[in-house]
Image (cartoon, rainbow, N blue to C red; front, side, top):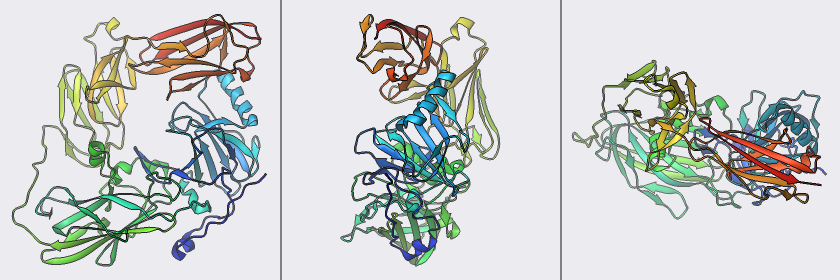
Length: 562
């Protein structure tokens, strides 16, 4: 049976004129009312959301349909990220992506299981030939799930162009019920430069937001002088869900003249991590609020900006009166307005915060290296977006690299020279970032070459050497040694490592590899007897689990099955 969507009628004639994407080519990947858990280009940790997240009624196992004719061009099975995902390339040049799947269709499941057993690995990736796995529009290709880095059952659905750039799927005719306008949570004002000020201060200012009866917003009148910018925390909400979703468009105006437009209909994966230049990253780290800057900072390569006037900044002169307006819109063209009245007033005496200084100055456009005793930190050119003084210190094997509030756009390397250690003392060491109130070590992927330990990271903060001497734990969940399991479909074991974390695992029955699926969210290993690889009555199970520093545990049991 074929499932098709009604054509999506754009509310705005301007938007309709600009929509160049086919409206009747793709059908819905689900045959239920579409309710969004997440929208396209929504602000996420270190990236823009590259698709839409469709709720699956809080359950797994719903049928996923091919959105159009095409061929399976990629299948990737991973513990993290998209989990189980398939990619379908279509004759019109677009590719659709279906992620966090519970399982694939029987044909695809057999195809990928064969590969997993050949490679003796749960995690696999394959790029089938165009004539190998053809699918038709409306064909069941998978079932919805919660695999990978998913916070609950849903389908992550993408549409990409032939350059692998994700595009808002709503532009292709998907219809979501939405008559609810966006809402604004916070607004901040930023003096740019030492001579600028807002309300007699050179520091960032939180402005008092006042909601109006028509659901628009104003703030208390602002006094300002010099170059200033604004940022807002704003979200959208659809009619059928309470999720705080992302916006589709932001525009600002100064005395009726447009200053900036931020359009979230398409981006490239190469630029997605620069979200940390788009938001006030320090505010996010310290307060967990994502403030979207209504101006473009230096060294910001994002392509989402349009109609820029002076990069969105305002130049406020003394003895002037201005009206600054912000329009936030969702895809259905529901709009919310923010109005800020600005009085230009220059003060001779203003509040200023003394900037932090140290002996370590980081040049953004140069390679920088910090060396102290047995520790070296190398920052490649353009690791950071701007110059700053680094707060760097070392105490024994612990180093302080400023704090997390400065965003890095590249990986940098921390290296420990441990030639003063005995070889036997190096075996279970790793480099960890100290997190939380108790500053416990969080494993940072550590490379060991002789007496040199190193890690690559994009996060500043406190790092230290840590030691993991505790083996992983393995516990059977639904069986025990010597039992019959003839009526079972699955074998389940819980595996945990509370220090450096699990690196790998391997399971065999009667000496032969069996495929076990690892779900890290509940620490569960699962074997499916429907794989039909066990034919004996008496079976010896062996599971080996290894953590990130090489500690290993082995579980063995005998089970019987007819």
